Length: 409
Image 1 (cartoon, rainbow, N blue to C red):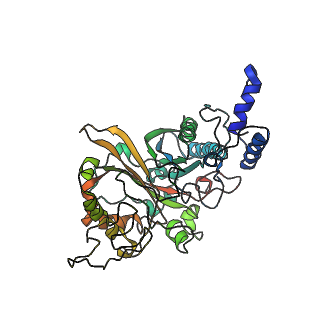
Image 2: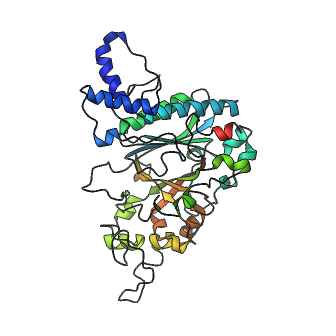
Image 3: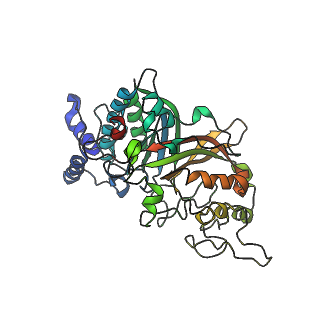
């Protein structure tokens, strides 16, 4: 039964109450249609959009950016092992399947009874320590080896890593929070929250036409991201279907690098717009490269200005991070902004929840970040305060739960 049907039925049921169980995605689609036909107001485009739970890849990777997000890491409780982890992933998968279809779990909080799916996605991954605690070290991929240290790192270990990781995204804040509470409740007795981060993007429909998102520095952020239509997309972002042996369970999966990047906004906002554009290497107005054209025009890294210097400075962020400057290394950046109030030093505790997807972080994130670490003009205005690396298995087939191929190996 859909959340919208529940609301209408509760009105008719009165004090008699209502028991609601988990249902399949197909059942939800039917329920939403029946609810509308019965006279309930039609869902808006934002509310009615549904992302499938089952598939070759997990949802929330190539899914378009959502306006609200929660990132949460869990550690297994003392004494919990492989058996308890498998039971938890079964619960999480059942909850995700129901919520993503617009349904209502059996132990629901009622937070989003009147909302549709709202492009809700739940994505699940495993951290390096998970394999030690479940006796599955033989199946731990080398891609989960610890990331190297970088000079801009000021990492808080309590806000980093974790046995399990869940990414939640939705185009409605209550739908996203509803999913967060459901995931936390499902974990009781098996895992406890290690850290949680809450993020946002611009809401769907806030601009006259779809646009690349802006970050809290006001910069267009996400230009030249790889897109599924590109022939190299799957190769760059997903583990090949041919993965075999101890890592066969990662076929169709991806690796997520998660970084909480504090933006030193007071310092940044003290720069002139011209200086900000020199730091990034792109126009602030539309994201176009300083070498000319529109947002999607390739960077002309050799173009010289009247002063004989390159138009895009040698230390500009866009130059240093460009795939052409990094042997073709590419990542799918899918971030959320965050704002957690004012820090102890009186400055905004705000920035970017950076999430980068790739088939291999040693060929994606690491070489690019090493190069940025050596001379990126943006480094003066950011600080990496938390970090995590997670193996995100492929999507579950119908009848499977996320991670089943690992936990039942």
